[in-house]
Length: 116
Length: 116
Image: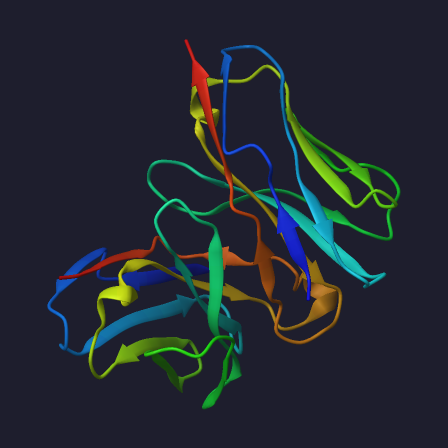
């Protein structure tokens, strides 16, 4: 069966420090990968998605970047964190074949990032 | 652009009662999917139910069912025989029915509390 791992679960970082959040998927190949952010008491907003190694699309302009160095690895980064980067970050994956219920997204357990 | 609106920020019912959560959406697409996700206190995003827009029959999953009114662009979730474990944030979400990266657009969420 497929599983998605996301770490760390919580992170407290000072303003101006770098960030690296990692997400890996097991049990599938060539998944679509996603990074979402959830501000306090709000819904989820799509930040980045990837349909293949090295292919990254950004949905909103921001202080963050994403990379996909391997098929099942998705990394969210920042060179210098801002206070506004605080939030709950969720990684997700989906099958990239529509005929195989590709419309279903499966989420990781999330990372609570606090920038102080 | 698609938008999803959940007009009930919070709801509270007694255990075993039936509760209906409201969701409306706006789109010019004819082929799309609608979802309800549950986010318990653990913050894990769990898919509750999905509806394909081209299907007139309302989706059901055990105690969960939807009332999909395509013309009215309404997609409500009914939880029957509510249980304490149903306490969670519930998010309505929209996805275009186009193969490629499957991007979810979320509503702001409804916080549901089931009281003993």
